[in-house]
Length: 143
Ligand SMILES: [Zn+2]
Image (cartoon, rainbow, N blue to C red; front, top):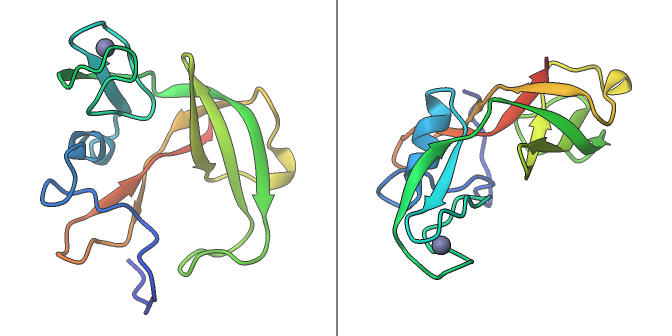
């Protein structure tokens, strides 16, 4: 990983030391996209939630979401990229099942990205947390 000085940490604290929903990131590290399904009413939330927005239950089970989706909308950032990133970066809302997942599109020429394009899950590793635990974020690449 790249090492750099930063004033603020741009990534979530994902490890179990910090985050009740660490199972999401544990699955991402293993190449799976998961979310929470409420044990009370069956609602599958996005993003994962420890508290059901439909019935207020705090009991949930991790469920796998498909590892494929389609680009619902996107934008290309050319300037002001976060430290450690280079080149134009494609940010997209990827529709997976009924969920709209904010993500980045990797391994894509921004000029060829299009609405409706099929993409597959490709989690990216970002800087470790302050305790040295690996961190991952959702990303997709053209299918
Ligand atoms: Zn519920």
